[in-house]
Image 1 (cartoon, helix red, strand yellow):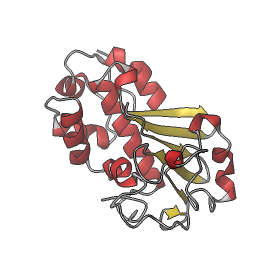
Image 2 (cartoon, one colour):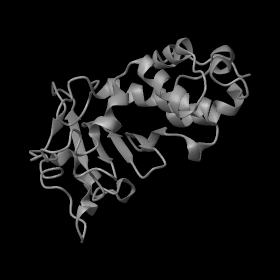
Image 3 (cartoon, one colour):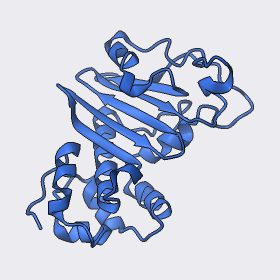
Image 4 (tube, one colour):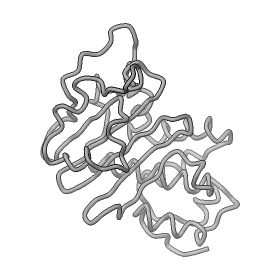
Length: 221
């Protein structure tokens, strides 16, 4: 399981970006109604910046900010022991944000990320061999005290991981071959889209393809 205590299975910066783009594209096909999707991605969030996010409708979320420096990812699992709302007034768990490198400081000031509403934070600069996390004394009486295991484990870059999650979340059959096609960032075709959702056309997906920065369809249909 991927978590802040074991980040070895999390893809590198570019791998994570591609994975989040794939997940956002698949969610867009399976669920045309944006408010009900889990994953989204904005390839032009700001000049030279991209942003992937997850909101599960139960109060949990994460934001992954990609820049020339690398990736900064902040997550919040609202029912886990390390929530800032464990006490009043709310207080970020010691160590979560204390060691964030200066190149990511703008993320700590970005209102859209709600940086003070956090249970875990990780980062990786280009050129670094591993993901980093601050010096944290984790509670000893919980297997996943910051909720990172639940929120990060789907990001392992494996198509089957998404396929199994989506089949459960959307309560329908999900084609593994179609998921593999998207994870490989191959251009969408009407046939692949229909395997996932026969009621959506490539033309209807055009805006999502553009926002996500996914390879353009080979033809509209």
